[in-house]
Amino acid sequence: MNNGVRERREAADMSQADLAVAVDVSRQTINAIERERYDPSLELAFKLAAHFDCRVEELFDPELDGRLADE
Amino acid sequence: MPTNSTEPTPTDRLSTRRRYRRLLGGLVLGGVAANLALRATGYPVAAEAAYLLCAVGLFAVLFGAPVTLFDERDATLERRASQLTLNVFAVVLILGASVARLVPHVTDYTVPPEVRGALYGYVALFGVFALAYGYVRSRR
Image 1 (cartoon, chains in turn red, purple):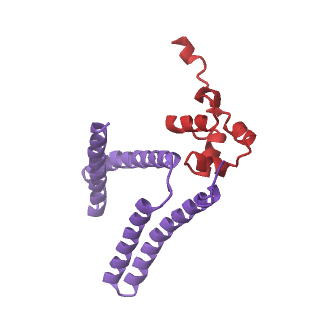
Image 2 (cartoon, chains in turn yellow, green):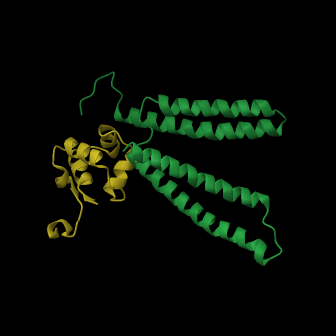
Image 3 (cartoon, chains in turn green, orange):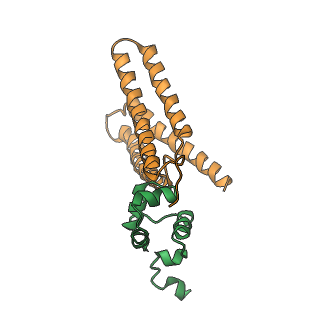
C-alpha cells in the first residue's frame, strides 16, 4: 500500500529504529511498511497516524482504483 | 522524543529484543545439539533432560522477556508460512492417499507401513487443524 511513512519519519528526523520503538514493532516491520511490502494492521496504522499527528488516510493510500467510488 | 535516565533508549530496547530472540534460537539449537551429543555418547536420560530444560528455558524467555519479541508482521509471516505448509501437506495427502490405495490393486508393490503411517499422521494433522479452527472460530 502506498504510504508516506518514510517521508514523515525523515521529516521528523527519526530513524526506523526510533519509530519502531515508538509504535512497539520491530525495525524490520517499519522497513517493510516503508518499502510497501507489508500492510500494517488497523491498530498499527492508527498508532502511526497518531504518532505523526495526522489522519490514517493522509498516511496511507490504499489505491482502491475507484472501487469505493463505484459502490 | 523525551527520555529520562531510567527509561531505556530505543537502541536499548531494540538490542534487548535482538538479544532475547538470539537467546531463543540458541536454546532451540542448544537443546537439539545437547540431545544429539548426549545420546551419541550413551547418556539417553541426560539427553532428554537437557532437551526438556532448553524447552522450559525457551518458554520462560518467550513469556518472560521484558520486551515484545514478535510483532504483528512476525505473526503474519507465521500465518502465511503455516498456510503454505498446510497446502503442501494437503496436496501430498490427497495424491499420496489415492496412490497408496490404488497401488496394491494395479501392481505387485506393497505400500510400506511407514508410508501408511505418515499418511495417517497427515490425516491427524488436518483433524487437529479442523478442531483448532472450530475452537478459534467459536471464540471470535
